[in-house]
Length: 80
Image 1: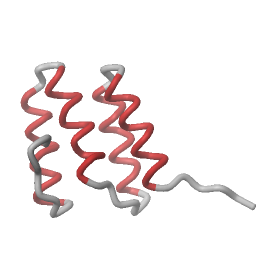
Image 2: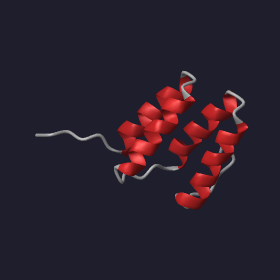
Image 3: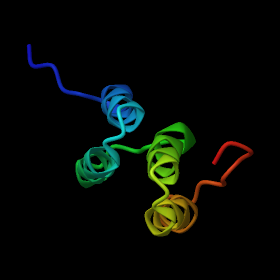
Image 4: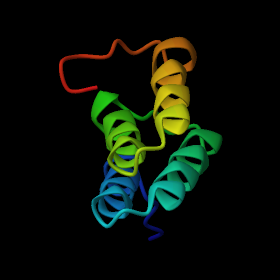
């Protein structure tokens, strides 16, 4: 039986990358996730946004916030 990663698996990897300051890695995993037609939630996007914000990369944080709102049709909350 083949085991395939799901949204939870990818979200855990993305969050782990974000927590160690690997913003680029977190964003790349989120891209991979969406290419595989897996649907990230607000928490997943917030991990990437927060990671870029912690490194003062405001442009990338804003880019991902826009993608969350416009592409994924998710509404930012108090955290994002």
